[in-house]
Length: 492
Image (cartoon, rainbow, N blue to C red; front, side, top):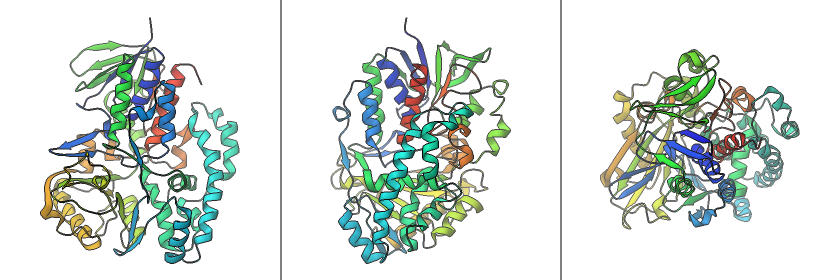
């Protein structure tokens, strides 16, 4: 009889593990408390309009292709991927636009015009960061369950490239003299929910990945990836149970034995994979007596990412702006400091606007737009009262968009709208402290120092998602799912 696997949560990490394990004949059962697949990689439907809940950038699709290949599938049979070119529009001071691109000649001309003197430095950036990427990428494909794993040959080889002791901003300052160009190449730290002045320099690979490998959009949205993975699992005989919340993890003799559902049903298994938000899972489904390391106090004092304020807008007008737009605060450093250190609301926030309807006609009627707006804000360790501040902050965002972009009279064109605040992330989406990018990626919370893929508190329990190694972001979450599946299959 095949071994039974329980996966708590149908997010991208759990779905990755589920695909690989079900393909190898394991009896996979995924329990999802929501009535849809994907977790934060799921879909919001508002009338005629469809939105991704969370991620909107797909990078390194080759990792996803490998997962499908390992399941004897072809990614292109399930998804229609479109490359975004240029990558995005960056707007500085409400007027200066920069369009990063994979077209090197176009980039050279743009940088020479906008940031004279830095055009040759861009070539150096690509050359040197290519070496770092090739050194680091293999370190993210293996587990770090023991301190001795920090001496892995892959990591030792990568060490000289990590620029230890430097921040992301410091490292990019070695290349570029223009402040706006430095920001254009460091804002990617927000994918980790961190400040570029605090984020480790190792993460220069994020901007390198975009500029060398591209950014992609699956037709229908990134949520279609989750749907495709779920389809493969079911084709393999696995089962996904929706609207079925897990109440408790059964631990006996320091071994995970199964789960208790909210309806009281007990289900046993050979292995349990936790795909829920890590700190939320620890404080809600794992009893205190089973947590010697990850106590409530320990979890509370760990360092977490920022949160996000979200607006999902169905508009009765077709807006002609690029797919990805980042509108920077006039003083970006101050904005980031207010989020990461002061934990207050900025009067001039940076704003990300996605307009996928410009290339994807499945998301809204042909004469309308589905607009996704994300504003980084402090997580719920702040004293921000979102019940009180939500409406005023919403209006501030609209004011800034109308002031700094071509999107005028935006409020007059709203047909449907949904808001998610940090409070909502915590209460409705079960994200600890509303920290949408999970544990921060400071050095003391990476590799061995991050919760392990093979959970260290008790046996037969595995972790996937942004709260374990390798960290946040879809490509690394897919890797976490692959690492945990391989550990169960004895391949590591």
